[in-house]
Figure 1: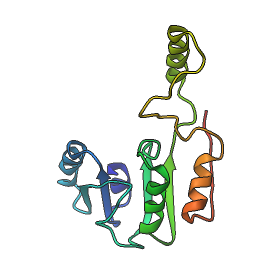
Figure 2 (figure 1 turned 30 degrees about the vertical axis):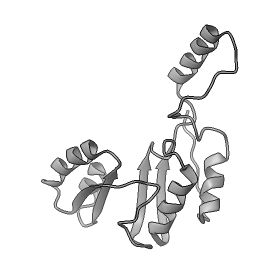
Figure 3 (figure 1 turned 120 degrees about the vertical axis):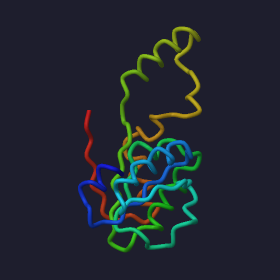
Figure 4 (figure 1 turned 180 degrees about the vertical axis):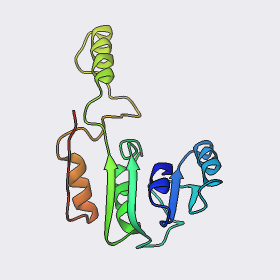
Length: 147
């Protein structure tokens, strides 16, 4: 949010996080950026924001983690103004996770190991996130994959 706020000094920027500690850090930044605020928010329930509130919603490596990902995606759509844009990043591959999976398979003696409770690759299946976006009401999708 800080980078966006510095690039767009005429925009109103609202930074959110579920963690009060992260929000407290972001609030330190707002001292030098009066057009930016920071507040605690649950991406599955953005009740403090009205429908059609934002021109742009950004989510950097966050959609993989809420318990109800489709609900979080629906909330992002709800708070966007008609014609607004969502800019989101997700992981489709994390080499370290591949190594950890290999080690766990060897230790457990099976290829069938449980997924971690907080899974950074929960949206890595091709088309999964795009399907959630479409189900939430997004109509124009542009996907770029970087390996």
